[in-house]
Image 1 (cartoon, rainbow, N blue to C red):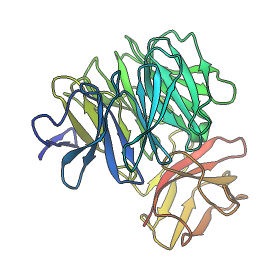
Image 2 (image 1 turned 45 degrees about the vertical axis):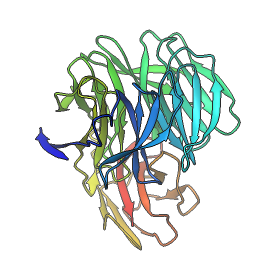
Image 3 (image 1 turned 120 degrees about the horizontal axis):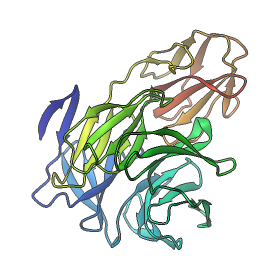
Length: 358
């Protein structure tokens, strides 16, 4: 294992033999399994990358037009394979789903944490919705100007955020209420591939033009910052459950998977809200105490790492009614990472932060 520090990042390359990687195109963190899943575009296979032993193990084969995007939903690992969505049992790697959407080149994929997957069609410039239980699907967006690539489900804003290919690449949003699209920012980047988000709300994208991992602030208000450079056609990325590591597949000549280390803090505020949130202790076991600097917070919504709403005092939401401090008993909570989102009466985010329950 080789460790190299680049711009305050820990870059770790996992080498599991001369033929370990074959044009890795996508990575997905499997929260339940505590492991990284790697799609090998050069071989049409999917492998499991084990951080503990630094080895790759075969998981699934027979994906001739991919795999491109990968998403874990429930007990199934979904992959994009040309016009098809294929699903593999998360425990055995056995293929359990194979549906032709009538698409051209399915590329990015994300889940709402429930039954729906949202998938970009790079060539046809469309976005599909696919129900993983009923296998029903429909086109949500068509006629996009640029080719959509990576896509990310933004639960708090009821939208998907997706990136696009080409010069002056745009980052856009698709409303899940009415399928309308809007441009969040027009960048100076060329060929954006993957997108993910950290627990402080910052966005990260990979760009082929400058071979870098770029970080945007939560509102896309400022110019992006290159946090890792010298990449090699960096493709579809993901962040782990703890929120401290972003996996990046180098699909070019580097032919490997590297990791960028994200600084995880115990408090966070959205820049446009001016609200400071303290979460203590974090990680927590039996109880957590939250304090925030506003009386405008109407409710607290708790999401799992996949974006689905987790348990809370009323099943989904904690009503706050102007209070500025809250203690939550955690004995009934499943161990893992949760995202705490404070919203005002209008539904706007005031602050967001990760909570780790151990």
